[in-house]
Image (tube, rainbow, N blue to C red):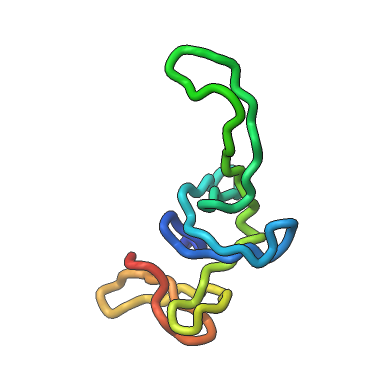
Length: 107
């Protein structure tokens, strides 16, 4: 299986669209749809009617963003980077920033 470029908990920056340049932490990745939900980015207002056990009124909800419009942030330079897979000695794959060679995430 291919190594995921963006995972839950990663800090990412939005590359295009009206939210361009904003950064946030990935809360959820929807692999089948090719989208991710990023904290405090791409927020829209939803109107909910009163119901059992739900929040009512006007609620701010984070909408999914295409994975192609997101880039992980390099932990060394704090800039957007591409990701490469690297195999360590024990046979485990880790994600590595292309520019600095720094490992991304905890794995």
